[in-house]
Image 1 (tube, one colour):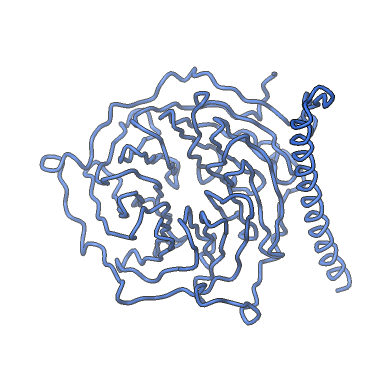
Image 2 (cartoon, one colour):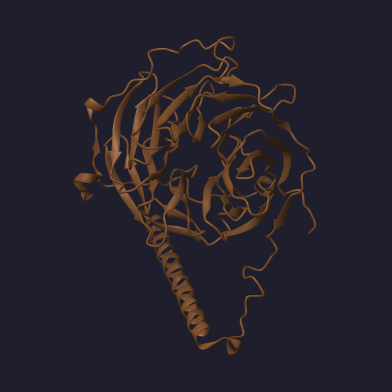
Length: 443
């Protein structure tokens, strides 16, 4: 296939972890890239070739998430050892830790102002922490199974969480209430993200699909059956018009959210391995991917060049409208409340302990790692000019046994039902948008 200037390309190729890479995060200024792994370590990759990478050790079990504070001054990490650690990303390896949950901590994120920290855990709870005052604030208790991920909205007013109980919940930080629950009958979500507009949330589903929910209509907005295996993570491009997905089927997909279709399939990780983590740089110029093959790839985005060249700006949602929730009309159960339990307050260490390499070499080491051959084999499949439906999926039913035919017919009926439901949802959304436009025209 002919390459174009808009095709993503691999810029750097790192290898240093000894096990699955579970999380990635760029420094706000794109000078560093932090990676966490089930090998219990964090590696801080300096993107300038003259500066070496450093490995940080401290967790006693697998690391599930790493994130930079908005200022870039500290990093937070979440682990299966039930703790959260706050690291100063320097060679001294200074850190402080606290027991955050009664189960494995699956995700961690700073609030947009950097003052608070949100964590999600296998103990079925989401917790809010005050970073500067080093204390626990409150628990969000409503999920009935492991909570896989929790994320702040860009304005810091909302929190979204997903769980193995097949629900996605939206929480209001100020009022302390669960204001919306999205239910999924078939499979649970592994990751959730807010769109840059804060009006849409995206979710990665174990059924191999990606779903977008409109917070203004509180309904399904878009549905993509993109992968052949569970989707492990989704990330919105900072401009909001594209989404990157990662899957256990060894591939990544780039979705054009305005056209409503995938435009690229990316294959860079080894066949038969899982792509477990992805992230964009703050300006969207680069993105990175990590997998069970222990490789970390840094890509040049390029596919957003089409948007730059367009004379008319494109938006997934109107920048004027904002989601509104009527708190008086909500029917909340007691289990949906956020319980602020003062007796559960757990403080961080009162101050950073000075950790010197001469006495505590276990906290920071120079890893046996580096930039590998930039000519690594990878494949970028441009799907922009492909037909929306795949060929080669016709089956000669006459050659099937009756049992196989019944199974096939059942699958066809199920697929048709799903398509009818998707079309019905799309029609409902269009009707709602037309109603909004009519009201605006009347004004």
